[in-house]
Image (cartoon, rainbow, N blue to C red; front, side, top):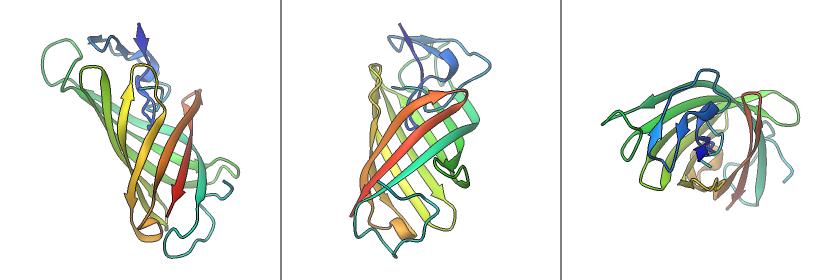
Length: 176
């Protein structure tokens, strides 16, 4: 069974372009990855002004474009527990197309899940931290575990949506 590493995100979503062939037991690299958030699997945008922290619910809709991806095999020739991959993406506001930041994500293989952690760096606004397990069944929700600056008390979830042509739809649903 093929699992496309998403992440997610990553979020977030997890095998890039058919990178991992699973039951999570083996993998082969492939050129032409489509998205780090492939599948390891409201109302405002990241560019609007906000208060100094999250006081009401806020939805940030983004499109992620993968910039870099690296698979790190720490053991045997087979892709398995302990191995990990990292990726970075440019983040654009889904409505305006304006670049609003980037993300940086690391996903580690356990036995039947990928454990992913990442940071969304939103230009001039602060950061949002995400973390969670992605199963081979393509779970596409990760926890928002905190943030900095304008997102200093953020919590909520990251929904990893549809992907195509090297992009992935990401929705940060933040609550105070």
